[in-house]
Each structure stands twice: as C-alpha cells, then as structure tokens.
Length: 290
Image (cartoon, rainbow, N blue to C red; front, top):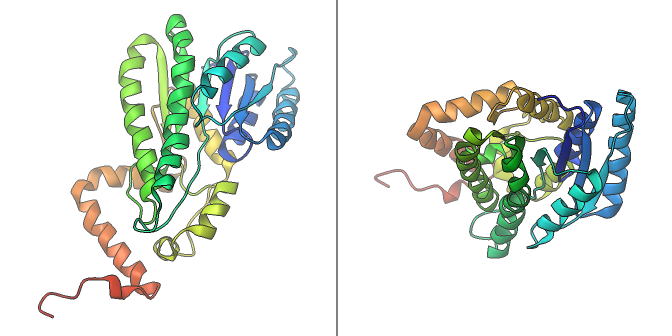
C-alpha cells in the first residue's frame, strides 16, 4: 500500500507504539490523526507527527490532527470517526488500534473491575472504532485495519489473567474480521509485540508479580517503539496478517503453535522455577508419595 495522501487514524497515538507508528506513517506521506484520552500528551504527540510529515517534504501540505476520546465509552468512537472524516476531508483508510492498558496481578487478587476495564479498552475500544469506520471501507472496497495485540494474545503468561483475556478476545475477533473482510478488499493485520519500551511497560514492571521477572530473566530483550512501528508499517505495505516484531517474538509465536499441547508442561516448568526463585515454592504441590 502506498501511504502518500492516505488518511490514517491511530488510537493510543499519544505515546509508545501508537505514536511511533503515527510518526512513521506521516514520514511516508499519510495524513495522520491521533486519538487518545490526554489532551496535553496528544498536543505534544501531534507536534511530533507534524514534524515527521514536514521533514518528508512531499511538496503537498499534510493534514494532521487529533481527537480526544475515551474509546471505552459507548458512542465516543463513532463521534471520533465522524469528526476525523469531516476535518480530514474523507474517512480513514488506515486504522491502527494501538490504545491499550495493562493491569497485571495474581488471578485471586484481581478485582472484576480490572477484567472489565481491560476488555472495554483493549478489546471493545478497537471493535467500536472499526464498527464506525468499516462502512466507508466496505463501500470503497479498500482499507487496512491493524489491531495491536500482544504476546499475551497467543501465550497464557503467568500474572496476566485479565490482560490476556482481553488480548485473546482481540485475536479471535481479528481472525474473523480477516476472514470476512479480505474477500471484500479490506485487509487486516494483527500485531504481537513483546515487551516494548513504553510508559505502559514502566507501569507494568512496577506492579506485576515478581514471578514474571524470574521467568523472563535479567537478559530479556525490550524492543523500541520505533522497531515495532517499522514492523507494523512493513506489514501494511506487504498486506501481512500476522506481524511478529523481532526474531525472538517470531520464534516464540511459531514454537507456541508447533508445540501445541506440549507448551503447557513447558510453562509449568517455567512457573515452578520462578516460584522457587521468588520464595513461593510452598505453593507447589508436594511430590507424589509425601
């Protein structure tokens, strides 16, 4: 897909993967519109997107803009799409659903509101944007939708019951979306980024159970938002459905699929080792015969 003169809508565009993707799309000539909740951060992000678009020097003035919204709130997604369509001079042709939150914790201590909030933001936020923008895409028989998921969308990771539930929902929805829309000219991509250097990861590390770090080890790689953005944009260009940024993520994705049911005893071993490292070995069942 050529990005020049395309109208792109990026949710979660005020920071992290969303902002990095927005900057790159602007640099490739797209008209980029950012959506997020914090107006101050949005204004700062918009200035970065405008700078990236101006630096590209395509000879045509780019239209970039922003819209403040909480996409978990019913009705706001549709209002945002109407606002951007009016201001941009046409409906979004590229959608990058990058808005998301993470609330880690042991499953027995997570309140049901943590489950509900992550479903509302990580899953239904994307669904509502797509539902609002889809009629125009289907009418044109063209467009590209990108749903930013997570490694926790294909691998059940200890400590992320609520987060993984929302991301597995997004993955299932994206699979069906691809099947229904591809014959009608609208392409879909799903992205499985690993830990990425974003404000969300900072919060995550401060609040997640210690077993997670024990499982990952001190050498766990953290990707930059820019590297994930490059993978996303390349995936749009080549119309890839599955986007796995980085070799480690790609290998993990394919191993999880190839191992099938064998992934669960492997996960059991990793969790048992992590429990011992963090002094919680008492939670492990006693060996048979004791």
